[in-house]
Length: 358
Image (cartoon, rainbow, N blue to C red):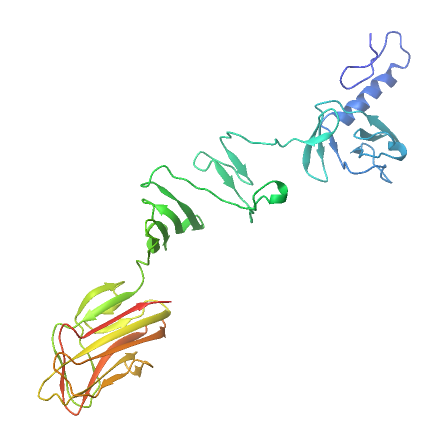
Protein backbone atom coordinates (compact mmCIF):
# COMPACT_ATOMS: atom_id res chain seq x y z
CA UNK A 1 0.00 0.00 0.00
CA UNK A 2 1.33 3.50 -0.92
CA UNK A 3 2.04 5.94 1.89
CA UNK A 4 0.64 9.01 0.00
CA UNK A 5 -2.31 9.87 -2.23
CA UNK A 6 -1.86 9.71 -6.01
CA UNK A 7 -2.52 13.32 -7.04
CA UNK A 8 -1.77 15.66 -4.14
CA UNK A 9 0.70 13.37 -2.39
CA UNK A 10 -1.11 13.74 0.91
CA UNK A 11 0.45 11.40 3.51
CA UNK A 12 -1.64 8.46 4.70
CA UNK A 13 -1.98 7.51 8.35
CA UNK A 14 -0.41 4.05 8.35
CA UNK A 15 -1.48 1.06 10.44
CA UNK A 16 -0.14 1.11 14.01
CA UNK A 17 1.46 4.50 13.40
CA UNK A 18 2.37 6.53 16.46
CA UNK A 19 1.52 10.26 16.66
CA UNK A 20 -1.09 9.98 13.92
CA UNK A 21 -1.99 13.63 14.38
CA UNK A 22 1.34 14.68 12.85
CA UNK A 23 0.58 12.91 9.58
CA UNK A 24 -3.00 14.13 9.61
CA UNK A 25 -1.98 17.76 10.20
CA UNK A 26 0.63 17.52 7.42
CA UNK A 27 -2.06 16.43 4.98
CA UNK A 28 -4.32 19.31 6.07
CA UNK A 29 -1.45 21.79 5.63
CA UNK A 30 -0.90 20.62 2.06
CA UNK A 31 -4.63 20.72 1.32
CA UNK A 32 -4.89 24.23 2.75
CA UNK A 33 -2.05 25.35 0.51
CA UNK A 34 -3.35 23.78 -2.70
CA UNK A 35 -7.14 23.91 -2.69
CA UNK A 36 -8.40 27.14 -4.39
CA UNK A 37 -4.79 27.92 -5.26
CA UNK A 38 -3.97 31.64 -5.41
CA UNK A 39 -0.37 32.87 -5.41
CA UNK A 40 1.06 36.34 -4.87
CA UNK A 41 3.59 36.27 -7.71
CA UNK A 42 5.23 34.02 -10.30
CA UNK A 43 8.30 36.13 -11.13
CA UNK A 44 10.46 35.67 -8.02
CA UNK A 45 13.48 33.35 -7.97
CA UNK A 46 14.22 33.73 -4.23
CA UNK A 47 11.93 33.95 -1.19
CA UNK A 48 10.65 37.39 -0.10
CA UNK A 49 12.08 38.89 3.07
CA UNK A 50 9.12 38.72 5.47
CA UNK A 51 6.51 36.22 4.35
CA UNK A 52 3.23 35.81 6.21
CA UNK A 53 1.94 32.42 7.20
CA UNK A 54 0.09 30.89 4.24
CA UNK A 55 1.83 33.00 1.57
CA UNK A 56 2.21 31.15 -1.74
CA UNK A 57 4.37 31.76 -4.80
CA UNK A 58 5.17 30.01 -8.07
CA UNK A 59 8.95 29.90 -8.24
CA UNK A 60 10.38 31.42 -11.44
CA UNK A 61 13.14 29.75 -13.46
CA UNK A 62 16.47 29.96 -11.67
CA UNK A 63 15.23 29.35 -8.13
CA UNK A 64 17.82 30.22 -5.46
CA UNK A 65 18.27 30.06 -1.70
CA UNK A 66 15.51 28.09 -0.01
CA UNK A 67 13.89 27.85 -3.45
CA UNK A 68 16.87 26.33 -5.23
CA UNK A 69 15.75 23.73 -7.82
CA UNK A 70 12.09 24.58 -7.15
CA UNK A 71 11.50 26.09 -10.61
CA UNK A 72 7.75 26.14 -11.47
CA UNK A 73 6.90 24.60 -8.09
CA UNK A 74 4.49 26.17 -5.63
CA UNK A 75 6.30 27.49 -2.53
CA UNK A 76 4.13 27.64 0.62
CA UNK A 77 5.25 29.46 3.79
CA UNK A 78 3.78 27.50 6.71
CA UNK A 79 4.83 27.21 10.35
CA UNK A 80 7.97 29.24 9.76
CA UNK A 81 9.34 27.23 6.84
CA UNK A 82 9.00 26.96 3.06
CA UNK A 83 7.11 23.89 1.86
CA UNK A 84 7.61 22.71 -1.72
CA UNK A 85 4.49 21.62 -3.59
CA UNK A 86 5.39 20.11 -6.99
CA UNK A 87 2.57 20.85 -9.49
CA UNK A 88 0.73 18.20 -11.48
CA UNK A 89 -0.77 18.54 -14.96
CA UNK A 90 -4.09 20.38 -14.82
CA UNK A 91 -3.47 22.39 -11.65
CA UNK A 92 -4.86 25.91 -11.85
CA UNK A 93 -3.53 28.98 -10.04
CA UNK A 94 -4.74 32.57 -9.80
CA UNK A 95 -1.84 35.06 -10.08
CA UNK A 96 -2.84 37.90 -7.79
CA UNK A 97 -0.47 40.64 -8.96
CA UNK A 98 -1.41 40.06 -12.63
CA UNK A 99 -5.07 39.14 -12.33
CA UNK A 100 -4.70 36.10 -14.61
CA UNK A 101 -5.57 32.43 -14.28
CA UNK A 102 -2.88 29.90 -15.25
CA UNK A 103 -2.89 26.15 -15.72
CA UNK A 104 0.06 23.76 -15.42
CA UNK A 105 0.52 21.76 -18.64
CA UNK A 106 3.12 19.32 -17.25
CA UNK A 107 6.15 21.53 -17.84
CA UNK A 108 5.05 25.16 -17.50
CA UNK A 109 2.31 27.44 -16.22
CA UNK A 110 0.36 28.76 -19.21
CA UNK A 111 -2.59 31.12 -19.71
CA UNK A 112 -6.07 29.68 -19.74
CA UNK A 113 -7.35 31.97 -22.51
CA UNK A 114 -7.77 29.76 -25.60
CA UNK A 115 -5.74 30.50 -28.72
CA UNK A 116 -8.94 30.81 -30.75
CA UNK A 117 -12.59 31.51 -30.01
CA UNK A 118 -14.95 29.98 -32.55
CA UNK A 119 -18.72 29.99 -33.04
CA UNK A 120 -19.51 31.84 -29.83
CA UNK A 121 -23.18 32.64 -29.32
CA UNK A 122 -22.57 35.65 -27.05
CA UNK A 123 -19.47 37.65 -26.16
CA UNK A 124 -19.44 40.59 -23.76
CA UNK A 125 -16.38 42.70 -23.02
CA UNK A 126 -16.91 44.76 -19.88
CA UNK A 127 -20.66 44.31 -20.19
CA UNK A 128 -23.28 41.64 -20.81
CA UNK A 129 -24.13 40.58 -24.35
CA UNK A 130 -27.71 39.66 -25.28
CA UNK A 131 -29.50 38.22 -28.34
CA UNK A 132 -30.10 41.71 -29.74
CA UNK A 133 -26.40 42.59 -29.33
CA UNK A 134 -24.54 39.25 -29.31
CA UNK A 135 -21.21 41.08 -29.26
CA UNK A 136 -21.15 43.91 -26.73
CA UNK A 137 -18.25 45.95 -25.38
CA UNK A 138 -18.12 48.63 -22.72
CA UNK A 139 -14.81 50.47 -22.80
CA UNK A 140 -13.23 53.88 -23.31
CA UNK A 141 -10.86 53.11 -26.17
CA UNK A 142 -10.33 50.45 -28.81
CA UNK A 143 -7.44 49.83 -31.19
CA UNK A 144 -7.17 47.96 -34.48
CA UNK A 145 -3.66 47.86 -35.91
CA UNK A 146 -2.20 46.07 -38.90
CA UNK A 147 -0.04 42.98 -38.53
CA UNK A 148 3.34 44.10 -39.83
CA UNK A 149 5.42 42.37 -42.48
CA UNK A 150 8.01 41.57 -39.81
CA UNK A 151 5.31 39.63 -37.96
CA UNK A 152 4.31 37.69 -41.06
CA UNK A 153 1.50 40.07 -42.04
CA UNK A 154 1.06 42.43 -44.97
CA UNK A 155 1.06 45.76 -43.14
CA UNK A 156 -2.48 46.41 -44.38
CA UNK A 157 -5.67 46.54 -42.34
CA UNK A 158 -9.21 46.13 -43.67
CA UNK A 159 -12.40 46.17 -41.62
CA UNK A 160 -15.07 44.46 -43.71
CA UNK A 161 -18.82 44.80 -43.19
CA UNK A 162 -21.21 42.97 -45.51
CA UNK A 163 -24.95 42.97 -46.11
CA UNK A 164 -26.95 40.33 -47.97
CA UNK A 165 -28.68 42.44 -50.62
CA UNK A 166 -28.69 46.02 -51.94
CA UNK A 167 -32.06 46.75 -50.33
CA UNK A 168 -30.77 45.88 -46.86
CA UNK A 169 -29.08 48.28 -44.46
CA UNK A 170 -25.40 48.37 -43.51
CA UNK A 171 -23.86 51.07 -41.41
CA UNK A 172 -22.59 52.68 -38.26
CA UNK A 173 -25.05 54.10 -35.76
CA UNK A 174 -23.70 57.00 -33.69
CA UNK A 175 -25.64 57.77 -30.54
CA UNK A 176 -25.75 60.08 -27.54
CA UNK A 177 -27.43 58.58 -24.49
CA UNK A 178 -28.54 55.72 -26.76
CA UNK A 179 -30.43 58.16 -29.01
CA UNK A 180 -29.24 57.95 -32.63
CA UNK A 181 -27.72 61.21 -33.85
CA UNK A 182 -25.98 60.06 -37.04
CA UNK A 183 -25.95 57.16 -39.50
CA UNK A 184 -23.09 56.33 -41.84
CA UNK A 185 -23.29 53.57 -44.43
CA UNK A 186 -25.48 51.94 -47.08
CA UNK A 187 -29.16 52.24 -46.24
CA UNK A 188 -31.77 50.71 -48.52
CA UNK A 189 -29.38 50.87 -51.48
CA UNK A 190 -25.69 50.70 -52.32
CA UNK A 191 -25.29 54.48 -52.28
CA UNK A 192 -23.09 55.76 -49.48
CA UNK A 193 -25.04 58.00 -47.12
CA UNK A 194 -24.37 60.24 -44.15
CA UNK A 195 -27.53 61.16 -42.29
CA UNK A 196 -28.06 63.08 -39.05
CA UNK A 197 -30.97 63.32 -36.63
CA UNK A 198 -32.02 65.62 -33.80
CA UNK A 199 -34.11 62.98 -32.03
CA UNK A 200 -33.40 59.49 -33.41
CA UNK A 201 -36.60 59.38 -35.46
CA UNK A 202 -36.32 62.18 -38.06
CA UNK A 203 -33.25 61.91 -40.31
CA UNK A 204 -31.69 64.33 -42.78
CA UNK A 205 -29.30 63.21 -45.51
CA UNK A 206 -26.22 65.41 -45.41
CA UNK A 207 -24.25 63.49 -48.02
CA UNK A 208 -25.07 60.86 -50.66
CA UNK A 209 -22.43 59.35 -52.97
CA UNK A 210 -23.66 57.41 -56.00
CA UNK A 211 -21.78 54.10 -56.03
CA UNK A 212 -22.06 53.79 -59.81
CA UNK A 213 -20.53 57.17 -60.65
CA UNK A 214 -18.92 58.62 -57.53
CA UNK A 215 -21.02 61.77 -57.94
CA UNK A 216 -21.62 63.48 -54.59
CA UNK A 217 -24.96 65.05 -53.68
CA UNK A 218 -25.71 67.23 -50.67
CA UNK A 219 -29.51 67.09 -50.45
CA UNK A 220 -29.74 69.56 -47.57
CA UNK A 221 -27.40 72.15 -49.09
CA UNK A 222 -29.09 75.58 -49.14
CA UNK A 223 -29.44 76.57 -52.81
CA UNK A 224 -31.96 78.47 -54.90
CA UNK A 225 -32.66 80.16 -58.22
CA UNK A 226 -35.32 82.87 -58.26
CA UNK A 227 -36.73 84.89 -61.17
CA UNK A 228 -39.41 87.43 -61.95
CA UNK A 229 -42.35 86.71 -64.22
CA UNK A 230 -43.16 90.41 -64.64
CA UNK A 231 -41.19 93.46 -65.77
CA UNK A 232 -39.79 95.37 -62.78
CA UNK A 233 -40.04 99.13 -63.40
CA UNK A 234 -37.25 101.17 -61.75
CA UNK A 235 -37.07 104.99 -61.85
CA UNK A 236 -33.97 107.14 -62.19
CA UNK A 237 -31.47 107.51 -59.36
CA UNK A 238 -32.79 105.09 -56.70
CA UNK A 239 -31.58 101.63 -55.75
CA UNK A 240 -34.64 99.36 -55.83
CA UNK A 241 -35.08 95.79 -54.66
CA UNK A 242 -35.98 93.55 -57.60
CA UNK A 243 -39.19 91.60 -57.22
CA UNK A 244 -38.43 87.90 -57.74
CA UNK A 245 -41.72 86.13 -57.25
CA UNK A 246 -40.88 82.65 -58.55
CA UNK A 247 -38.21 80.00 -58.02
CA UNK A 248 -36.88 77.29 -60.31
CA UNK A 249 -35.69 75.52 -57.18
CA UNK A 250 -35.44 76.49 -53.55
CA UNK A 251 -33.79 73.79 -51.42
CA UNK A 252 -34.46 74.27 -47.71
CA UNK A 253 -36.86 77.12 -48.57
CA UNK A 254 -34.14 79.69 -47.88
CA UNK A 255 -35.42 82.13 -50.53
CA UNK A 256 -38.61 84.02 -49.73
CA UNK A 257 -40.39 84.91 -52.99
CA UNK A 258 -42.80 87.13 -51.08
CA UNK A 259 -40.06 89.23 -49.47
CA UNK A 260 -37.71 88.85 -52.48
CA UNK A 261 -34.67 87.88 -50.41
CA UNK A 262 -32.49 84.97 -49.34
CA UNK A 263 -31.99 84.20 -45.64
CA UNK A 264 -28.97 82.13 -44.60
CA UNK A 265 -30.18 79.09 -42.61
CA UNK A 266 -26.71 78.37 -41.18
CA UNK A 267 -23.30 80.01 -40.87
CA UNK A 268 -21.04 79.49 -43.86
CA UNK A 269 -19.60 80.79 -47.12
CA UNK A 270 -22.12 81.40 -49.90
CA UNK A 271 -21.78 81.94 -53.64
CA UNK A 272 -24.33 84.26 -55.30
CA UNK A 273 -25.02 85.38 -58.85
CA UNK A 274 -27.60 87.42 -60.73
CA UNK A 275 -28.69 88.38 -64.24
CA UNK A 276 -30.32 91.76 -64.91
CA UNK A 277 -31.87 92.10 -68.39
CA UNK A 278 -32.74 95.60 -69.69
CA UNK A 279 -36.11 96.42 -71.20
CA UNK A 280 -36.71 99.85 -72.63
CA UNK A 281 -39.36 102.20 -71.29
CA UNK A 282 -38.86 105.47 -73.19
CA UNK A 283 -35.18 105.59 -74.11
CA UNK A 284 -32.25 103.25 -74.69
CA UNK A 285 -30.00 105.88 -73.12
CA UNK A 286 -30.69 104.36 -69.73
CA UNK A 287 -27.62 103.32 -67.77
CA UNK A 288 -28.21 100.10 -65.86
CA UNK A 289 -26.59 99.07 -62.53
CA UNK A 290 -26.99 96.08 -60.26
CA UNK A 291 -25.70 94.92 -56.89
CA UNK A 292 -26.29 92.46 -54.05
CA UNK A 293 -27.06 93.86 -50.61
CA UNK A 294 -26.47 92.33 -47.18
CA UNK A 295 -29.17 92.75 -44.54
CA UNK A 296 -30.98 95.43 -46.55
CA UNK A 297 -28.29 98.09 -46.37
CA UNK A 298 -24.69 97.00 -47.02
CA UNK A 299 -23.46 96.47 -50.57
CA UNK A 300 -21.59 93.16 -50.79
CA UNK A 301 -18.06 93.79 -51.99
CA UNK A 302 -17.50 92.58 -55.55
CA UNK A 303 -21.19 92.40 -56.44
CA UNK A 304 -21.59 95.80 -58.14
CA UNK A 305 -21.84 96.11 -61.92
CA UNK A 306 -22.91 98.72 -64.55
CA UNK A 307 -23.49 98.74 -68.26
CA UNK A 308 -22.88 102.23 -69.66
CA UNK A 309 -22.98 101.44 -73.39
CA UNK A 310 -26.01 102.00 -75.60
CA UNK A 311 -28.67 99.61 -74.37
CA UNK A 312 -30.63 97.22 -76.56
CA UNK A 313 -34.03 96.29 -75.20
CA UNK A 314 -34.27 92.63 -74.12
CA UNK A 315 -30.63 92.08 -75.11
CA UNK A 316 -28.40 94.19 -72.87
CA UNK A 317 -27.67 92.49 -69.56
CA UNK A 318 -25.49 92.64 -66.46
CA UNK A 319 -24.12 89.50 -64.81
CA UNK A 320 -23.12 89.68 -61.16
CA UNK A 321 -21.24 87.09 -59.12
CA UNK A 322 -19.56 87.10 -55.72
CA UNK A 323 -18.85 85.01 -52.64
CA UNK A 324 -19.54 86.14 -49.08
CA UNK A 325 -19.42 84.69 -45.53
CA UNK A 326 -22.82 84.79 -43.82
CA UNK A 327 -24.10 84.13 -40.35
CA UNK A 328 -27.38 82.32 -39.83
CA UNK A 329 -30.19 84.84 -40.29
CA UNK A 330 -28.29 87.19 -42.62
CA UNK A 331 -30.26 88.26 -45.70
CA UNK A 332 -29.16 88.95 -49.27
CA UNK A 333 -31.26 90.74 -51.89
CA UNK A 334 -30.83 91.86 -55.50
CA UNK A 335 -31.13 95.57 -56.25
CA UNK A 336 -31.28 97.47 -59.54
CA UNK A 337 -30.64 101.11 -60.50
CA UNK A 338 -31.05 103.34 -63.56
CA UNK A 339 -29.30 106.63 -64.20
CA UNK A 340 -29.94 108.97 -67.11
CA UNK A 341 -33.21 107.26 -68.09
CA UNK A 342 -35.67 104.93 -66.37
CA UNK A 343 -36.43 101.43 -67.58
CA UNK A 344 -37.45 97.91 -66.75
CA UNK A 345 -35.66 94.81 -65.52
CA UNK A 346 -37.27 92.29 -67.82
CA UNK A 347 -39.45 89.37 -66.87
CA UNK A 348 -38.29 85.72 -67.14
CA UNK A 349 -34.59 86.46 -67.63
CA UNK A 350 -33.93 88.69 -64.61
CA UNK A 351 -32.87 86.20 -61.97
CA UNK A 352 -30.97 85.72 -58.70
CA UNK A 353 -29.33 82.51 -57.54
CA UNK A 354 -27.06 81.22 -54.76
CA UNK A 355 -25.83 78.27 -52.72
CA UNK A 356 -23.71 77.42 -49.71
CA UNK A 357 -20.20 76.35 -50.71
CA UNK A 358 -18.41 76.06 -47.39
